[in-house]
Image (cartoon, rainbow, N blue to C red; front, side, top):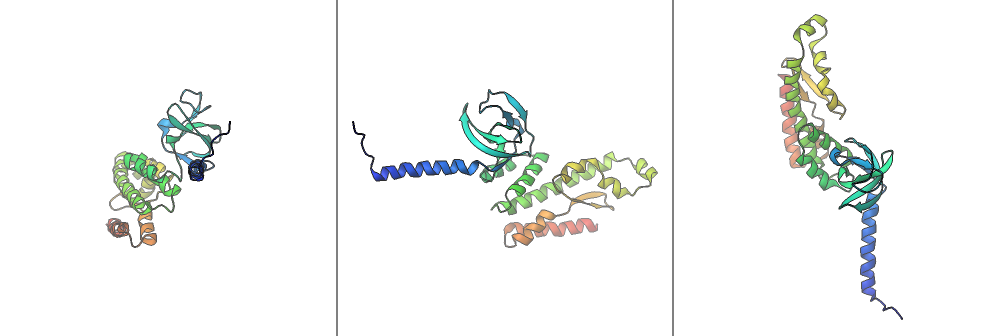
Length: 233
C-alpha cells in the first residue's frame, strides 16, 4: 500500500518546527551554567528525582551542560561539574535564562540577593538589564555597609585595639564579616572619623561610563556625590 504524500507546505512546517526545537535544545547544550538554587541542585546518577544522588552542588558552581532530558515532571541537564551527572534544570542558569535570572534576583533577599546580583553581572556582561542591576547591586552593598559598620563597632574590643597599638582602621578593614563580600570582588572604604564602611561605588561608576544616557546614570551620579560627602564627613 502506498503511503499518502504530504503536501510540500505541511512538510515545510514540520521541518521548521523540528529545526526550531533542535536549535533551542542545542542552544542549551555545550554551554556553561551556574548553580543558583541549592535546594534543587542535587547531582544524580540518572535523570530522575528518584535516582541515586552523587552530591549537592553549592551556589555559584560552574557546570558544563552536555545534554537534556525530561522525567518525573521536570527537565534535567546532564552536566560536568566536574563529575558527570544529572541535575534539575531549575537549579541552573545560563546565558539562555536571562529573564528568569532577573526574577530570581528580585525574589531573593539578604546576602543571597547580593550574591545573585553579582552572579548576574558576571554571566551577562552585555545584558539589557545591566544598568538597573548595577544600580541595585551598589544600593544593596551600601545598605550592607551600614549594618557591617554597626556590627564591627559592637564586636571589636576597644581595649584590645588600644592594647595592641595597631591602627584602628586596620581592625575595621580586617573585620571577618567583610570576607564573603570581598570574595565577590566588593571593595569597602572606611571613614575613620565616623567609623563607618561605605561601598567604593564601582557599579555606579560603570553606569556613568557605559550607560551615560540612561535613567540609572542620573541616579548613579547622585549616589557618587553622596559617597563623596559621606567620606568627607
